[in-house]
Amino acid sequence: MSYIPGTDNNFTYTYKPEGYAPLGLQRINFEVLNSTGAKLNTGDTFTNFTIRSNSMVSFNKSEYVRNNYVLADILIDSSEKFQWEVSVVNSTEISTQYQLKLFDSNPFQVNFLIDGEFDKLNRLYYVIVNMTEDDWATWNVDYWGFYVNNSKPIVYENTIQFNPTSVFRGERCDVSVRVNDSESNPSFIDVNMRLIDPNRNSENFPSLFHSGNGLFVGNFTISGSSPKGVYEVEFEAIDENNGKGTGLKKITIKNNLPDIDGYKINDIDTDDPISVNYGDELKFEFDVDDFEGLAYVTVELIMEDASSDEVDEYEVSREYEDDLEIIIRTEDLSPGTWTVYVSVTDIDGETTDLDDDFDTGPQQITVVPDILSDFLPWITLIIGSVLGLVAGLAVGFRLKKLKYQAEEEKIPAKKKPKVVKEKEVPTKSKTVEKQKKEEPEEVEPSKPTPKRKIKRKL
Image (cartoon, rainbow, N blue to C red; front, top):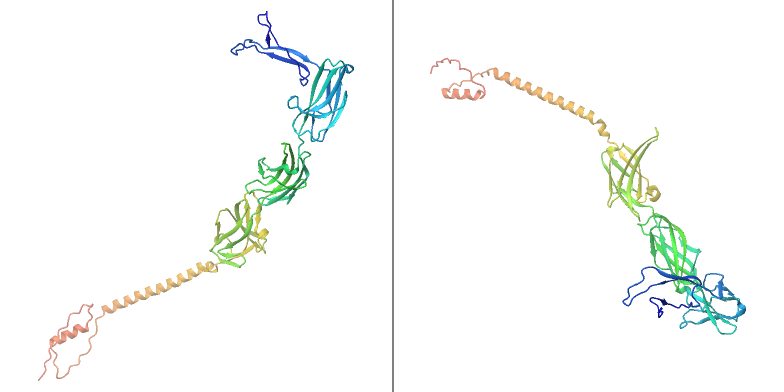
């Protein structure tokens, strides 16, 4: 912008539209700055003008990819006054511009292939119309752009294969898919795989390997913590020009059922017959596992009465933990033969019954009745009666004996007749001593009767 001499604040600016300038109504904004860079005009200063051209190029499409044909119509206003040349160039910058296609003079339509000469993709190329008047006094150049995109790789969904077609968690699944790109060698294409679970959570897996002829192979494994259900497997192919193509296929991820490898009752394997006495305990130990995780174990005992069609049932469940033991008291069971049914339920709510997974199940346990217990009250009564009778006889005998002894103590003891030897004269002291020996110590001696003096002749 330049100052107009002789005016106070008038400036002028000359603008010559280039051939690549857009046609139609244009708007230009102006800013007036002082020497320090401060803006002097406070409002929005602008002006409008229209750019027109004597030529126009009409394309059959606005965007193209490799191996597409471009059909362009050349429209010239007052064509009788002009001569024109049409070509295809890579840029509007003269310093970097080079010619890709050149056509005959004065064409009204051109047709060309987007081939390997268009080496840069995702960018604009231009049809240039160079016009001159008949006297060659003036000339004009117009640029008409068209966009050449990178063609996206094609993921052929009908070639996506899963082996197996449905897979358990923790199980490997092999994958194959075919991908093609018109601009890139398959060896330079990256094919990524992503799985989306039923909760819309996604997990990326390593890139697939190109095995040749556009076939890509790989595999995936779903962890035990991932949900079961229908997954979406998304394939994304990226070529060397950053073109992206996608394909999608669904696969069912299944839950692993719990495994029952066996169990023991009172440390006895279930392939042995088991009998327990009434009153004993039944201790169950289990050998079970599950890939995703176990929730609880259930033991069900059933005894059928064939005569009455009645069924006795006893069931107990415990939350699973390592070294789980389930104790059942036989006092809670009726004597007889019980059939054992063991089942295991995992965290997904799916159950495996013993007869579904273990060859020897279900198992039977015989609870032997305690016959002595039925007669124990009578036996106790009889023994008590006998003991009472014996005790009564003993007490009666004792009392009778004591009574008999008491009566004996009341009767004085009879004196034995004394035999007097002729030559022996008993002294008084000996007589008294003899009497003491004959009398019992516990009985108080009766008063002695006065002895008569016997006079003997010497």
